[in-house]
Amino acid sequence: MLRGDARSWLRMSEPTALAVGVFDGMHSGHRAVLGALCRRAGEQGLIPGVVTFDPHPLAVVAPDRAPAMLTDVEQRIELLGGLGIELVAVVAFDAATRNWSAAEFAVGLLADTLAARVVLAGEDFRFGRDRSGDVAALRLLGESHGFETVVLPLVDGGRPASSRALRAMIAAGEVGAVAAELERPHEVRGTARRHGAGLVAQIPPGRALPAPGTYAALVGRDAGEALPAAVDVDGGVGVRLLGADPGFDGAEFRVRFVARIPADASDSAIRVALGRQGS
Image 1 (cartoon, rainbow, N blue to C red):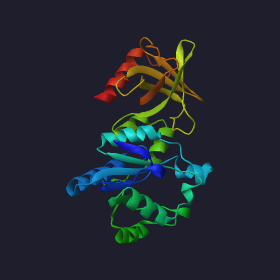
Image 2: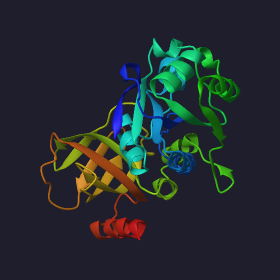
Image 3: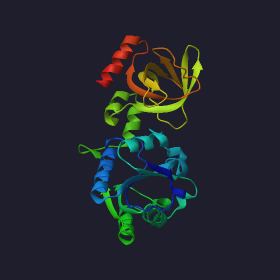
Image 4: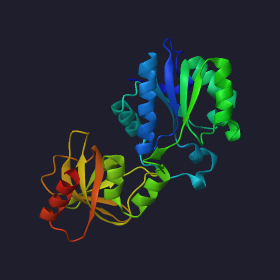
């Protein structure tokens, strides 16, 4: 996969089909858009790519309204790769990039640098300084600079799919329903630290954590490691492994929330909850 900072990207020599957005969570609406993108790219011999933003634009423009993030940028890139995306250009959203005009973004970045021939965007997509550009402006800029604009609604079976709805479900502790929507458990990443007989996961600020409570979870240092654990969320994230600790202390690791469970759930009940989610 080609990946990097959009601001320092070298001019593409091969044409692309691009989707633009934060893509936080990679929910069913996102997956529908990216599936359409990959199909269009395959039909037209284009490289399927995504332009995304880190941090979330609201973290710069209106920090008090910035959402808790479902995924960090590395998770997003991994998930995008798993969906067939071959290029990810990350716009480091800061004081400079927030002041790009609509033309600087659409023409300077999408058309000239990333060689876009097709651009897919959600129907509510806004871009450029003070959100001055909308999909109508994107379509006009594309017509004069060589790319087609395709506008797709983020829907799943006729109902809107949104990261906001997923954040609300996570905040309510409904991690099983979230896993069903995402087709994977909600995951947070941080650093494991030894704490008494268990571990504490030090999670970077701004991540979406479930409601206070106890959860059956899978933890590991990478996607291939999934050890059963009970995880307590209450101002912090405490992890009790059901088996031997393989040496997590100080390691970067992942916590995947599978199901909410009673605080006094036995190890066998936790394993049942984990197995039921995987069935």
